[in-house]
Image 1 (tube, one colour):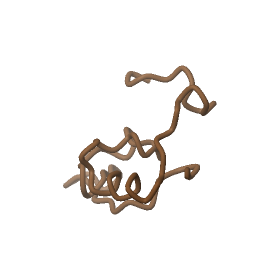
Image 2: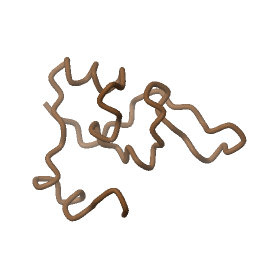
Image 3: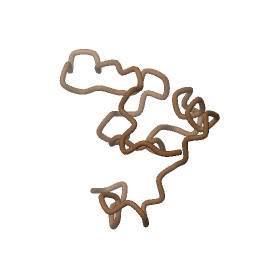
Image 4: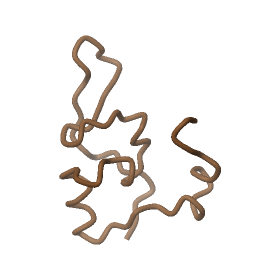
Amino acid sequence: MKKSYYIDYPQASFEGQPHRYRCLFCKEETTKINGRLEGHLPSCEYRLKLEQAGYELEDSEQHPALAGTDEFD
């Protein structure tokens, strides 16, 4: 099972920076997560819960929006 975007996780803003948000569980910034389940740390409670429920990680070769991207984009 897959979703187009994984954006229903709890978020918290960075202190003193109300325009920047991160996952409440793994603390990864939302711009790094980019709506992808694999954007969360492997130990993230949100990611683990969805993986256990049957949601799959996105294969970047099959997702046109992720093709050709890397951590430095």
